[in-house]
Length: 155
Image (cartoon, rainbow, N blue to C red; front, side, top):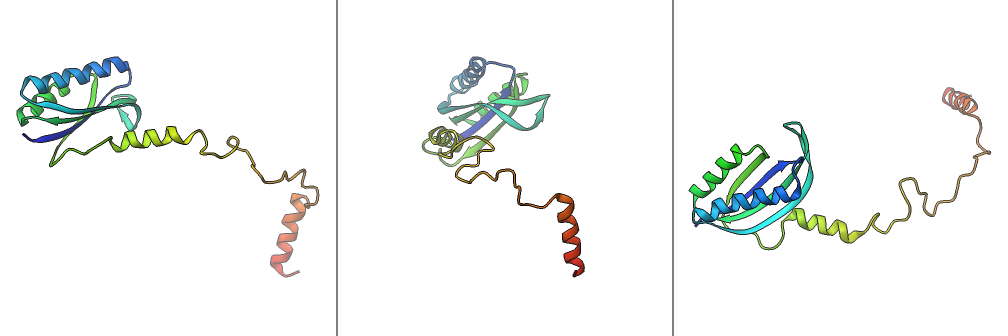
């Protein structure tokens, strides 16, 4: 039987439990038509690149499927009819990838890293650099502009 990879995006308004229910509904369609779900990954609520039907975010779900093409066509038809599904894409594969998808791997690497990746402080932390103080030895701004003009003229 052919192998497929299907990713769909559900509306941000629904809960995670409802997104899982959508996944199980689509999985049931596949299994009833003689197919098999090999792997399911929920990528969670993620930002969209652009607004789709007034939604800025969506619940992403990946399905790896081994099924006849009729089962995929029926699942896609049900996705088109379902108002909670914003977008979907199904691809036929030669072989299913092993392990987690790149999205989940990147998410796990981020959580292992820690907050700032071992760097101290927040956004404006100066780290090991010394404080510049009040910069009393610098000329006033007007004097600097005047001296820069005189240097440019060759005075």
